[in-house]
Structure formats: structure tokens, C-alpha cells
Image (cartoon, rainbow, N blue to C red):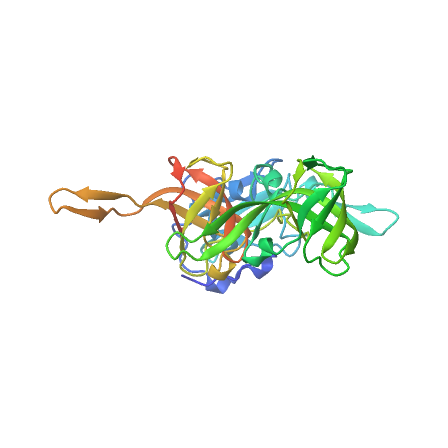
Amino acid sequence: MRKVLLGIVLSCLFSFSAFGATEDVVKSGHPQSYTVKRGDTLWDIASMFLSKPWMWPEIWHVNPDIQNPHKIYPGDVINLVYVDGKPRLVLGKRGDGGRTIRLSPKIRSTPIDTAIPSIPLNAISSFLKRSRIIDNTDGVSKAPYVIASRQERIVTGAGDVVYARGQFPEDAKAMGVFRKGRDYTDPKTKEYLGTVVHDIGVAKIKSVSGDVGTVSITESNQEIRVGDRLLETEETAVQPTFYPSAPKQTVEGEILSVIGGVTQIGQFDNVLINLGGRNGVMSGTVLSINRVAIVHDKIAKQKVELPPEHVGTMMVYKAFDKMSYGIVLKALQPINTGDMVTNP
């Protein structure tokens, strides 16, 4: 597979000279132009023009005469043109959404509208604010934990003071309060992949004496209990604009779980897979979801693995080292935990 340089800035994503045959890239019945609307996503638009939406970085042509050419705004007009016989998607006209205005008192400009996201952020934003992955075994077990509340309550919340025990980071002023979730291991190798923890609050460190800290709960989205852990906060927000692309190397993994606890998965469901940054997976990586069935050959009296069947498409939006969160963009039939994810 050709190498495509990936990144957030579209101009750094590809080289036109590396682009080869494109006859099967353009979708049959595609429009010649399209005016971007509020609510559109980059995946929607790529799917409108391309039979392989993950090839967007190779087809998109940056117009140097347009301000912020790497971002697409509502009202923008996208045209399909041919350059040297090869299809290119270009920004033909900037709509009012991408027009900039001056802000005072600081001399700076800002777009009138927000650039369209790659995927429907409303399907993932609330989840991302509540969960993260710790990918080392000591990350959770050695974190400070709540041992009691000043008010001697079983559960506490915002405004309460609690005591926590453990090794506190030096000069820590505030920490997140988390509840341990599920531990994950690789289904085949049994390697420990990480632990999901759920964000339930924010704590201000008032004082530390030895290994016991006095902590004030400043925010909580559910009750805080004895045993909940304190972890340093980290940025969990997803970059709204990244670009769909195929993996740069051959990958093969599987769906470990679906967020929400059900076993059958549909469009816009969030899933966790056993591929991450170490496998070359990153935000925007598009993967094919395939099902492999095993049947019993009654004649030969042995089990036979049937060829993989394509059942859907997903895109990664948050990659950790060993695992990633993704969203199902297309489901041809109900998708299950254990289904394979591979190069599209």
C-alpha cells in the first residue's frame, strides 16, 4: 500500500506524486459540486464523492488562494475536477461560514462559523468526557484512593471533604476522581492492554501529611465512594477536524467491547478495539469490520473457518498505545464484539 503521510494539517497529509490509479475512487453518481451545510461531517462529504472515503487525503487539493484552505465550513462549495486526468476535490468557493471577522480589543480574526467535524461529535463527546484508558498495571493500583469522608458519609459529592491515601504527585493542586472500570487483555495473546477508568469528579488537594491527603471535592457527576481513585487530569478532548485515512501498514485486530454494555453494535455506536498507536492507528484511521464464522464440516468431521464477511466500517477518534476508541460509521448488519477490524 502506498505510504501517505498523515497528520492534522491537510497539506502535510499527502503528496500528489505518490498518487496512482484513481479510476475506482470516484463514486458512481457523484455530484459535480456540493454546498456544505451545517450538520455535515467530513465523512459525509467524502462518502458523497468517493467510493473509498478514506482516500480523502489523496484526492483533496488545497487551494492556496483561499484562507484556511485545510478547513471546511458551512456554505463552502466543493467541486470535483480533473487535474492531469486524475480526480481532485477542490474548495471552489468559500461560504460566509469561513469568512473571518476582526475581534476587539485584540487584533485577531476568527471564522464566523465552526469548521465541520470529521464525525458526528454529539455521538462521542459526552462519552469522552467520562472515560479514559490507563495502559500500565500500576497506573490505577498505585494511585491515591479515598478512605473516608470528614462528614463520615458513605457517599459524598461536590462541597464535601474526603481523605485519600497514597503517593500524591509533588505540588499537586487538583486531581481527577475516577472509578475503576474493566481491565482488558488481548483475546489471543492475553497481554494486558489497559484499564478503563470513569471520570466522576474533580478534587482540590488541601494538604498532605505523610501518605494521607485532605481533599475537597469541587465537582462531581455522581456520588464519590471509598475506594475511588485520584489521578492527574489530562486532556481528553478530540480534535474535531482530522482526516479519514487507511492505515499505513497492515493491521488486524478485533472489537473488544461496545460502550453501553450491549453485545450487538449499530451505526454511531462507540467501540473499543485492541489496536493503538503502536500498531500505527491514530485519529482518523478507517477500518473495515469483518466477521469470521466457524462451521462444522460434517463430511470431514472438522471445524472450518469461512472467508471473512464485510459487515461494516469504523473510524478511530481516540488512540492510546494499545487500544483505541472508534465509532461505527456504517453497519451492513448487526456487529458483534469479537468481529475483526482490518485495513479497508
